[in-house]
Length: 267
Image (cartoon, rainbow, N blue to C red):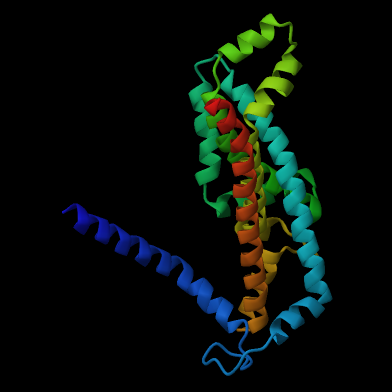
């Protein structure tokens, strides 16, 4: 029975991965198709990637996307880390309610969030464009950072704070020299998650972009509506590869952070 269950679980995992990755593999393979369509593979070519690299407007959009992603992830990480610390040390009955409200923002439909931001920016007079997109991405990234950092805070031993206080540490020294170094893996995780969400976001960005400003997700959607073009495949493949690099980079940093801790434990 155990062998049978093991085989069934393996088959299920294989099926899930095929469903998830088969469309991406199909898209990637046809990004090298010289035929210009996705009906048949006529031969290998890199002309679609060259077309992407020669598109000045697209390169500007790529730059806009990365600037928005890096800025929003950095700002959201700073706000989210101190928000998580405040929420963790909050000694009121509404703590669970505040955490629930934070989590609701994560699971709320992007269409509702995007429409809400559009109404807000219109009312307060913020012109749609770089500023509106940046503020929107910061707002929906903060709850993600909070969720990634809180578990590390909950793992901390309360005696660490008492020891720091007994040694004469101020509140800022406790945060900067005790709390922040301990929760560093959670901070990295929150930053990379916020960065990934910002790069991939379409629904919210679609509502708050103005004329003359766009991000990669919105641009790909706009081009896909005009018809099938294998340059879209090439662009999507490049984005997917960059996401893989981000994931590998995150796991590499996480493993480096865990090595000193493992060494201390072993001693």
